[in-house]
Amino acid sequence: MPMRFACLFLLLCTSQADAAALYKCAGPKKDAVSIQSAPCAAGSKQVWVRDGTPEPAPTDAQLRAREVKRQQDTEAARSLSRMAGTTTTSNNVVYQNQTNVDYSAQRCNSAKVQAKNTRDREWRTLTVDRMRQLDAWVESECKKK
Image (cartoon, rainbow, N blue to C red; front, side, top):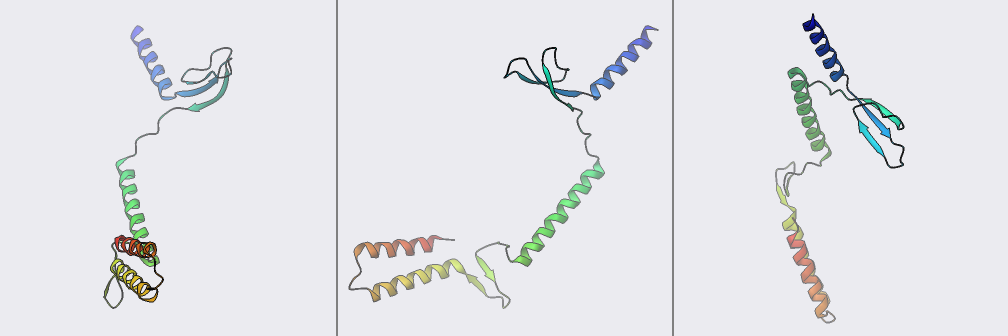
């Protein structure tokens, strides 16, 4: 007979552990707020009660389904990115006629040509500060990737 009571007691304890609840209590003092697993003590106000039981772990089938969906979403995002023209793989862009264009080299060469033209055009009025500015600008354009 005592064995039956012990088994019944263990079953009741495990069922209460599965149905755990969290209580937010505000104490009699203004700043006394606590979150606890037992009901609020006398003199304190219960703000809310939430279910504290954890969600069950996903099954293998659910994990496989999540992985398949993640792969499908990744491929769809890549496809949309290619269609929108926002895929960036490198500085080289391949056009339909299969010619490679290096934009960083073009930008650097263009800056050098513009600086040379400015020096040729304004050679009489060009100050040392303005020449330094041109050189710094060319250097920054050539460093960009």
